[in-house]
Amino acid sequence: MIQTKPEGNLTIQTVPFPADTNSGGDIFGGWVMSQMDVSAGIAAGERAKGRVATVAVESMRFHAPVLVGDLFSVYTSIKRTGTTSVTIHVEAWVRRHSNSTPTMVTEGDFTFVAIESSGVKRKLPDV
Picture 1 (cartoon, rainbow, N blue to C red):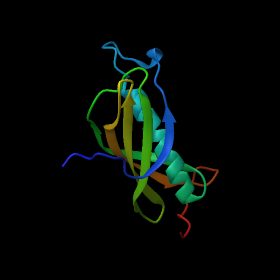
Picture 2: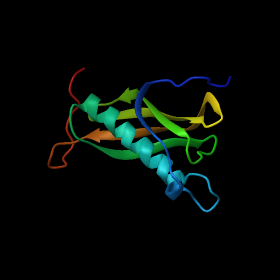
Picture 3: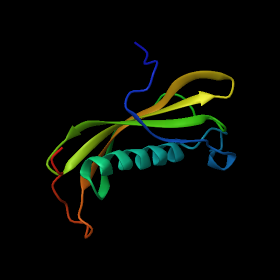
Picture 4: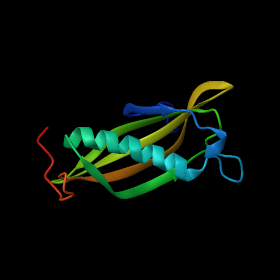
């Protein structure tokens, strides 16, 4: 079954520009992944109530290209937590100029570890 609406919380929304394109004219995958990592970091930091660091990106799936001028929205939800880590499921969706129907373009799972200001791992606080 095709997913027709985003799952999770809207975390960031932006519009990609021509400077963000690859040689084929589509938005560079690294730009997409960067936006997703920023969004996941926001969600992980809220859960950790402080500083976090990305330790893994799993299951990254690119479903469709992102185009210049798309309304690019990233949604996040907590997938699992450990003692010091949290995994965030991230979905990137777009609304195209000519179509108001949202389309999922990318999804993945980003794992973060909670850290002290010194960079040492710390336990996640209780919910």
